[in-house]
Image (tube, rainbow, N blue to C red; front, side, top):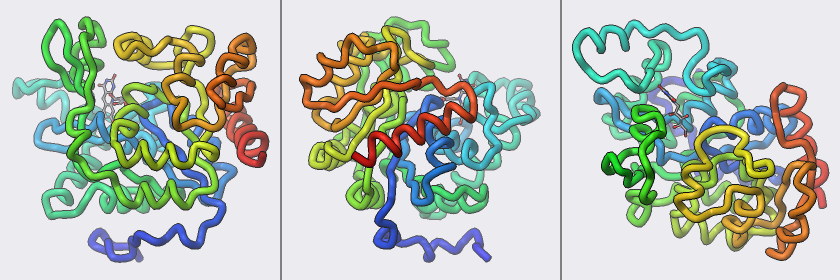
Length: 327
Ligand code: FO1
């Protein structure tokens, strides 16, 4: 029986026995649908998650992207929101409001237990990888979930309303301020998680989820060692476009991409990822840009990339496994 304090069973070299390992690089609410689809077909799946939207709130360490994967694969995700636990209540938040504390970030009562436990374990000296592993087992999730770093880093936006953490910008300010610049604070100093590097190295293929290229995938690419490792294995990397035509499938990518001078189109994403990408999956309706993307020495595949149902999640996952990872 796995106990709260049983961290020793977690080792660095677990992947040696998994020659069919598939790694997904993920972050944000845009990734979970594909991860769910892949998890239904792939036995040896590992998710490497963004950590730059992590935030300290009310003395607790909140890790939204890690939790979205944990809850999504644990079948307790609030699907309508894309974050938090389904059918959660908000007594804690209501009481905070009575006490005059800020309540712009909606922490549900059940969700709160995750943050309380995580923070307690962090304070006892456990790292984010160990804690995520513990939570994964408690939520009975099969794929391993690896934070890109155990250290704190954060995406920050310089705006007309000051220097904001990405959660302050998106949730508290509702994405309204004008963005002047975006930076990944801490990216030069944090240590890349060696278990993430190990997983990338040992995986048969690496899938970049259809996530926000700036706020979800961007923080991981800002880490020199992570980016360098991906560059050295680009032929086994496939990304799924988070954009169809000039329309972002979900979330605030458009504003962030414009700020970083990345064209809001699959071509813009391909150009942005060109040094790390072997294959790129775009919508079947984006045929006119195939040739342009191919000039970056990227092999382009076209299929339906919208996932509105479990069936579509499975279809895209199977397309990736059948047509992109076998050839
Ligand atoms: N997103 C919101 O738009 N509003 C919220 O109040 C909110 C609360 C929240 C609580 C826990 C959690 O894990 C995620 C939460 N999110 C909320 C989502 C979060 O801001 C984003 O999904 C990610 O940071 C995107 O990477």
